[in-house]
Image (cartoon, rainbow, N blue to C red; front, side, top):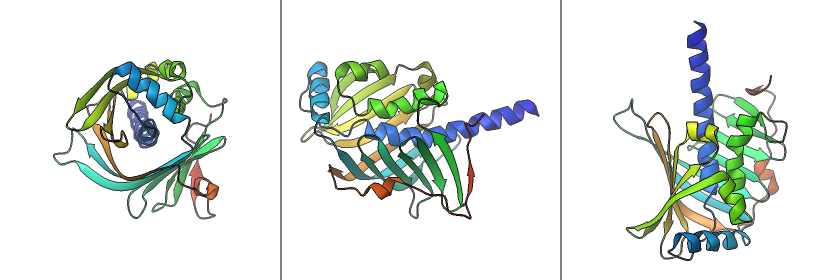
Length: 238
């Protein structure tokens, strides 16, 4: 029974972290690229990040699971604003919302009137910090900063898209997501897709449309106050 409880708890954490990770990796390519060579592509991406202040896009998420014969397809929307505010909403109506602002993040389930609170500061558990560091890697100031977090496996051109294959350097992050793939249009290098490959063989792909770089976003978009009728838990609390 103890083993079963532990397995279920671990599975629950994996599901929550997948939802969050998708938003973070989606943001990891919100800049522009201007060159075909790996080194030139990366250097130009880092230069473009200096112009980035905010980013918004609609997306269609496709989840492929070993246990299902048909993939799960769900629409959503993502918003990001420097220095680190984000809102990742999945479903219409919204079924899951991940909001990050200041020292904490909420994962909200509106239809269930439930929410989970997570720390974002230096006092958070190390494994959680490793996972959340993916957000910082999405907006690097320098190539050195980015390469501390990611190993670039390849940059290729296929059917009008650049395909970037990345791998997290954090051992814990690799246990969750050993393979990250980004797609960018070759005509203007805008982000078109992200794909996460998980250790259990499942995949989560996001295809982006209506992307806007540097939109004017109200700061209230990233702040959330739990309503009185919501149950709020802190899964990482000791």
